[in-house]
Length: 161
Image 1 (spheres, rainbow, N blue to C red):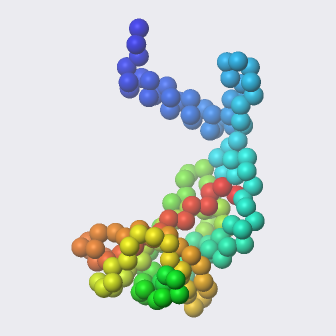
Image 2: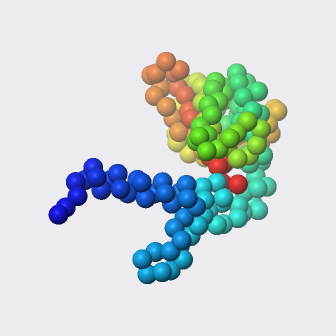
Image 3: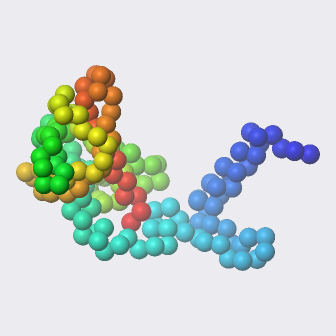
């Protein structure tokens, strides 16, 4: 007898939740050990030294929040592209991550408002700010005709350390 797609999906979700919340399966049907990596535990791999030394790694959500309404300079290949204004910092931490906004273990989004010309394309830009310094940031353009006008979003997801 075949299970309905809904029942199969529900069973798969229950299994995934059991693995994630329970820390992994003790063994599979052949008796082999399975990974017991837990969410937020670096999934068995250390955070590379280069990542920990990156300037953006050390900038917390609260540090960005203190800079709302300030200007950030975006450039590519040493050529200034545009100045964007930070208009929103939104906490995206999942419920299992207790975050105060002062640690590097967090997830959040940044929304920048930009000029009508030039419209920036999705990609990685060199960013500089008078308080936060220089770092690289991947941004995605939003709807230029929305209530914010031309705007861009960046997601910072550091729930792994």
